[in-house]
Image 1 (cartoon, rainbow, N blue to C red):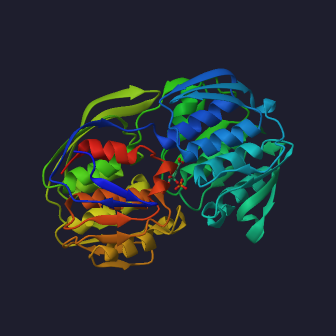
Image 2: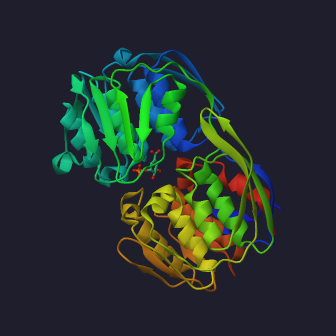
Length: 437
Ligand code: S3P
């Protein structure tokens, strides 16, 4: 059953399978894990987090918080964090490094802006190309001083904060990372903070803050809270990551024979756009046993094979609810009957890599016609021959093409597969549990 994905250097060869079957669980949600760490770090007292995602991105958050003097102990996926309140954070003695993690960078810039000390934040080669102006502009409007390359748009950025005031900010681009960075900044500001988004994004921050006693109102695409609130320590279990489960939902849909149950997955409606989209293409995905943990809906997800047909996807709300799954969706639509068109998804260009370019190139590498539409792409369903694909060092591109391999004619080789350690280090092991040659 195992021994299907062979490894050579950083390249992994994925052979097609006869069937995908079994019951699996996925690691903790990346977005919720970051937020749990940040909130625990500014609470006064001991927080306990179970099923934390232990992966490169969340370890970037842990390392930065430790450099600010926060005590964090982690054993397997259980974390104990001793916070001394936001005022207990210490000036870091060196440059903080967010690695590959946009979430760490944007939330950390919000947190650092509350402090009347000097700090500097950098990231890896990918993160250093990603836009930070979207968080820097409102933080400067709140009273922080930030500077960096490209007129304070690119890391490394220096920060000197303190004495912030709450503002009403209308975000030009929907972004949960920016919204969360601003909510974090409000924790060390005066007055009232109001944030309006063009389209509502994932609301994990709002839910976890409510669970830690913070009074916060949300309506339509607006969040409002009094500044300087003090979250209580957390005691939570992080649900499984929907974005990690998504690769098996996609693979289960296209494998000729499949029956998969993924247990304990977070199904926050801000994240599950992929299910609605796949269903509109003909897929069979069911949520079972829905319950609540730490204010978040959690369910078991059942997937069996279905025949798909192409669609046009341009609804901005749905795009935002599926933003991290769009590369997977594009790759899966290679198996659909007819064309699939994705539009209004220009944000994909500023993720860990240019995900439109990476997907279009990857699809041509495995025999599928695909076109870059600027703010999206067009994929012609057809015969997936197999071949080689570049992950571009992007975890989600790597796993999307691995999912596509289950029904390809020949193997698909994917370079730099180690990139999966960003969000899902156990991916190959769990994939192999389902694969039957
Ligand atoms: C995230 C928000 C999304 C998403 C990212 C994680 C978060 O980014 O793409 O993977 O945890 O808040 P944006 O908010 O920048 O769109």
